[in-house]
Length: 112
Length: 114
Image 1 (cartoon, one colour):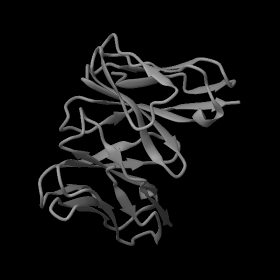
Image 2: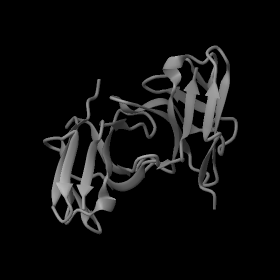
Image 3: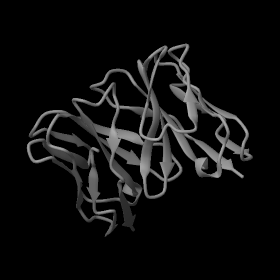
């Protein structure tokens, strides 16, 4: 049971390039989330999704795009990467609103 | 803007010490309070989800209490061990938060020395 996986685990890219981070879950959880980890800010929500084809902005959505055509996948795209988007990105899932969130292993992104 | 505050920011204790830290959150429109344990270079792991005022949860040497009327939760670690070293995050979910959206505190970084 893979649970929640993220790919790639590490990525180096250049300013201006488009980058897509993948998140895949095998649990069929309704909710999925993208967070970024930044020093001094902890975990900040980028986007979330309550179900397939339903997405909404979080705290820091600018520069990011998401889609959720299937329940199990929630890709995050940086349309034109900037140095300020260098971070560790965590995907999380949640079965019901009352329950805990489960985090993926994270993707470490470096934008040069 | 909803604010979730954790204190202290960091804590250094000796093995065997018991410790506790605080999470403060808005007392109105409370729905749930989550606690997570986050080791360096790993991903956050769930400890507790607390929903009722006066709730107390326990997992081994770690326990948590909840006061929704005054807007705080305490996390206690009894007899700290080096493997307890991690950042402990709390996260608030209010009634008005859409979906499962959580507001995270910045965490308390615990270091336990042998």
